[in-house]
Image 1 (spheres, each protein chain N blue to C red):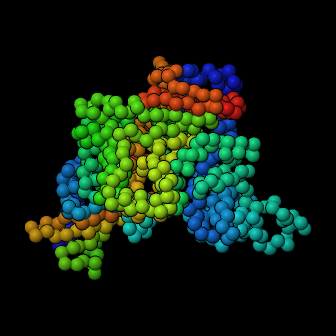
Image 2 (tube, rainbow over the protein chains, first blue to last red):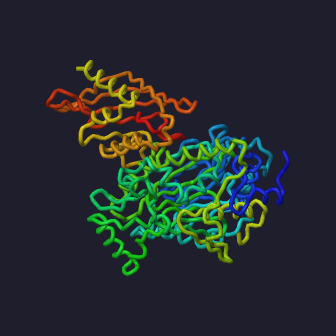
Image 3 (spheres, helix red, strand yellow):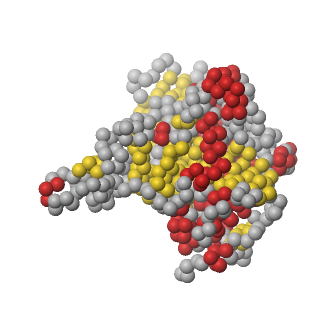
Length: 436
Length: 157
């Protein structure tokens, strides 16, 4: 198969459409791993998944077996889960606690920071063979921690995390600042599932306001309102009105801002029909926020966004409170990891409702996820068809405002979010990522 | 007694397989709930994520959704076969009118040329009503792959 050059890559991306090979060509997928995922900061998880010294979790990042642990000095370490001797996976449990890691094959041992701790019967190795850090567990070249979020990069040449996130850093802050203690926690584990569709189809969907009233019609009652997805039990909480009577579009969608920044990041404003929760639990939460932040409490409590996507690999969902890590497995398979987030120090009732909301909408049986995944798989299958070679993203083309920093802003059911991702994709693939 | 309980549990499975979901949720007590933990050895539903953790209002929402004319993810619908076996009455856990029942279950499902199977241990807490019927106070299904990789699920276990 011919490799793609800049001209053929550019020919896949039109101003209002992309070629189907963007989603279905395995050669493109291989290039994406090298040129996009390996050149980005990837989210490993949240540090509270390993709260105490010796705690570890095993995980998959892209297709790599990884290990995240907390060392006895409290530091977090992300390592490849591969023995430096014969290559065995060192840890296999999803999570556990260890004084040190010991490979079960020949007993090579490693400290919980990945440093080599020794080999059994070392006398049969040549003098000086086992030395220095040569046999430490390998680590990704870059690792950073930002407000509890653990990141790595697989390429040492990647720009620093701050430049990579740009204005999207505020989107992490907005989530963390909602906690009276300024900390998040991930105490409930995770959902893991796979679906038979290209990773970019999900990315285009997360901030797509054109789909909810169709894809999620089955989640609505007769008045067009969706089942309740937020607010503590006993409190009054906003419900999302997807449809007006007789299944017509609720025009409030068109007022909602969708926007994005350099590096392909996009986000969607909080639903305009949404409103602040009210009730005894929320009042208690307000008081704890005022105690913690005084006059800043109101600004910190504000939920600004619905979904924020950190291209190409993860997102924060603010209404149900979760991190979503999206691992590309193959050209037609994506793995989702959904990690519910607890606002540390907020009333326990709020956490319970957030957890239940995650169960109801984003578990493998989640009533929202099932609709989306079915649609994504249909796309992947349908795109195999001949006749039409292009996938169309022409809604409100050109109406979005774009600035010199690589940011854009559009409204409602415009498909500007997807067009923004397509442009970023082309920059990454052609090696011209700067500025996007 | 065990024969009557077996008959109740077999009928419950049949209602699900025959897509008689409205009749299935009628088996639950008003305060009843249905729980499928997302991690092994859970002591309460707020310790970890759950694949299902539905009280009666949520079960009703779920069934309304399955009946919605625009539920594209059930087009064509999932077919299921629940096989229930190894039914035992839990000794010592029964107070007054409540009966704890252990069973094992395999649910095989089929949709769009794909067949999948889910196995697990099931516990029911039943209550004998004044009319002499059973109702479900809770049903808990511990799947052997509860914390594994899933595809979408729609029909309860």
